Image (cartoon, rainbow, N blue to C red; front, side, top):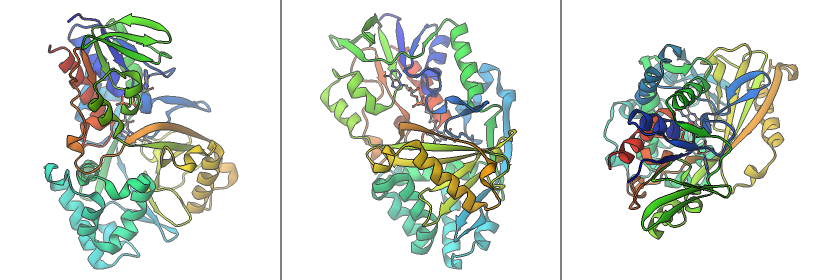
Length: 429
Ligand SMILES: Cc1cc2nc3c(=O)[nH]c(=O)nc-3n(C[C@H](O)[C@H](O)[C@H](O)COP(=O)(O)OP(=O)(O)OC[C@H]3O[C@@H](n4cnc5c(N)ncnc54)[C@H](O)[C@@H]3O)c2cc1C
């Protein structure tokens, strides 16, 4: 096999694959549809502030990310903060995220609190996900915490994140999220989350500069139209009518795009890709002249608000103004996903002012919305055996996206680790 390698997608996974390919002596060409690198981590100009379209925080377990920062020489830009959580319930913000907060929580009986506490404790201690792979997450949570705690603390979070998929999620996948957050702490009472100075863009620019310096090529605004196969092997990559010969292709674009890009894959492979559902996101970002609260993360259970929570990013990374993200996760075919940005921004401004009535209209300095159609694969019970291997039965072709590191949830660190793994596979033959 020859050495011409193409990487599709310049999100964290594609960039990490290219980084590893360069270390191994290959000079990849990265094709990126967008006009910037980053995928879900990409930044935009928010009236003078360069900030990511979607919030990102890091946990102490993000080893692959931290190792990459070392390799890029930017580990000293990583910061750790003691963050706070709250629950918006019955018209008030209640502290959340530690045993004292749980005991003091208003609206939940003592038995429900004890059951919830045991569940959270057990999730952070457990290591083996396999027995949970085929278990239904909603039934599993309900069994542990009981109907009252499920109704108050879980039901709306599930339903506003997963909608009709709520009834068919893998318990292993939900557990891995609880564990990741639950283990990122100074101690039982103090949460510890991290950020990069100036956000993910610091990593993206360093990664892209390193790739270019070492001889890799990044082609922006270059959506791949088709990967051509010939005699059971990769032959060429087509972009806007231009065909380029490649011997190896690593695809990191969201899986739902792959059947269109590589239609000549075997039918069972295409069917497996098509069987993975994805949730879309419309993420509203608000710039405020003063703080909404002192919390980084606020879970929401309020019949008047159609959101599972919000993230006050500047309580993690302090900035000149205060920045709040409010994600609307929606199935792609949900009628709300077709609503204009103003529909979302108007609601969010209203909710924010309900949570903190001291915020006046003049305190909202700017508000925008960003959309990503394939923001989150849905991992149903038995997901571990659903996907074909990334190393496909086509010579020179490797395909993956964020669903490939199940049971871990999509994350920058996980995408980096998997991107490197793809490069290792692609250069070991
Ligand atoms: C609202 C939100 C909050 C998040 N919060 C966190 C967090 O706090 N911490 C964390 O670690 N992670 C978080 N994530 C997840 C994190 O952003 C993703 O896991 C990560 O960006 C995935 O990287 P990727 O490279 O695997 O995929 P992507 O970022 O999806 O990159 C895929 C790339 O492929 C490109 N592409 C698509 N089609 C084509 C084509 N035809 N040709 C060429 N290129 C193409 C896309 O433009 C994109 O750049 C969050 C995500 C969202 C949406």
